[in-house]
Image (cartoon, rainbow, N blue to C red):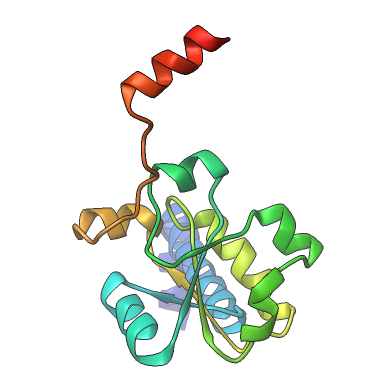
Length: 157
């Protein structure tokens, strides 16, 4: 036992680093076990959508949503989720809900709010819509106005 104390005394920095790593791991495990959501990859997400009638909730800005979103996804702003104005999503509390944002960080906060609001199966797309795009999966994009119509609108104003 004395040898351990001697080692710790001689290698104080090393011991502090190891204790820090252990504390970080324990906190990470505790945080993930108490989270109200589960992270899924793109493959698991498509299975949830196709086999379990999963609903994709896109929490990005209106402009980002128009630039490209997953087919049949429901666009709800984070402020609406926090206020509890969920619209048609309110009737889907027992269905899998997959929350999606650009990189996955904003989705985590909103997934926790949905879980606390009584949604039974809440998921977050790991790495967000960027992982969906990286996997070359399809996105629905808003139709752009033809150039002639844009010019006509500009001339009319």
